[in-house]
Image (cartoon, rainbow, N blue to C red):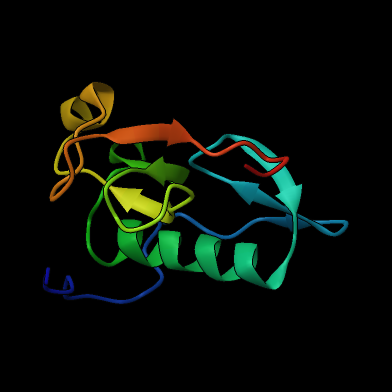
Length: 107
């Protein structure tokens, strides 16, 4: 597991959760989403990954369908690649590949 960076939690220019009229901003998907409890936790944790652990937005994705994990409908809520190039190639550690973004309407 990555070590936390030393320093104050509120760094100038730090990524913040944005909420507006029942919506929450997805920094990864670059769009407003309905603010559900699940989405709120996902966006708050995303800010921790960026601000405290130093991961970049361009090496992350949300709602990704994965294969070879026991279910044909398995998905990752939040996925962090080793690098942006691994993301571009669709390579997931431990799996042969990721299928792609899950549809918002279900499976």
